[in-house]
Length: 258
Image 1: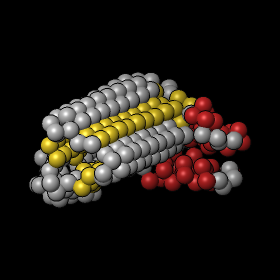
Image 2 (image 1 turned 90 degrees about the vertical axis):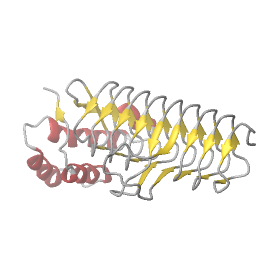
Image 3 (image 1 turned 180 degrees about the vertical axis):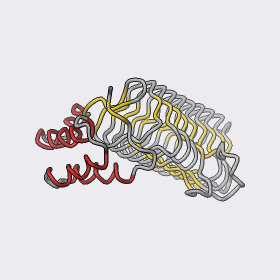
Image 4 (image 1 turned 30 degrees about the vertical axis):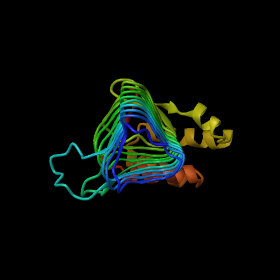
């Protein structure tokens, strides 16, 4: 299923039913799983680990060395999960000594011209829209949706089930289950539509809303709000996830809308 005009290094490990179109370059130390389709003019460099049934569109570059002056040629990789789509001209850089690998999970859609830098960890079922730029060591949790043209500062953490407005500048952590937008970026309510689509109950959504009332609508600082949340609201998986996220935030979370 390899076109004669494609170059595949003899040491690359390619499953038998992978489709490789013309003018593809696949370097050594590459593994590609069953059913994956690789469009023309794709470049897959040393250290790529690509799962099953992925679709990689023309012009994408996977596992290029990091755009990081600290990189000293260390042996690092890129991992891409199963059923993930990388659209035209997406770039995913491999890791550095900091974490050793860059990860894009399963069932993701990374739209055209987006960049995922070194040591990022992108969860499962994430959508990153066109021309989004994700700097180094960013973490994006499962089911996050990032609007087109978003710029994400290095070391930022974006929580699960978050919806981010296109064109946003993300320079603080964004806790789970919320919408974020405006300029400067700020809390814009609960991602209730996304949560309902993923079968969260109305009761769970109401509980999440109550947690964020404490954090964003009570005039308390984050530490006091977290103490009140733990003291006054029932323990749930979502409550504990939000509390842990805020406590562990190294950059601080985004502010409420003023």
